[in-house]
Length: 104
Image 1 (cartoon, rainbow, N blue to C red):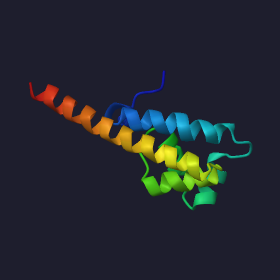
Image 2 (tube, helix red, strand yellow):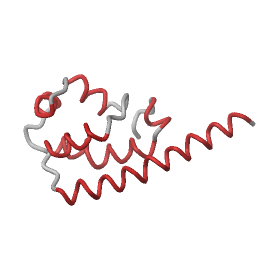
Image 3 (cartoon, helix red, strand yellow):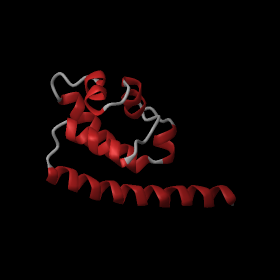
Image 4 (spheres, rainbow, N blue to C red):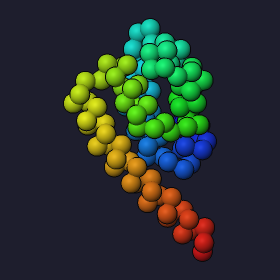
């Protein structure tokens, strides 16, 4: 089971999607270390670390840059954006439910 920290607690649907669609692909891509990926998209290695350790949900632009660097084709990127949008709204509902439960 993954370590639960802020993105697992606040945005579980988006975090799971990023974990299964993006992070696993980087780990399976030969020679694609966090540093190599960071250099390809113009961010620090620490930025990639924070994203992969679930400390941060990146902006969609950064996610698309990562996907391009990992070789996702156009159809894969389109499908991901649809899933990402769905996860975003599920997490909004999740947060609202948590807020309502806390108000009781």
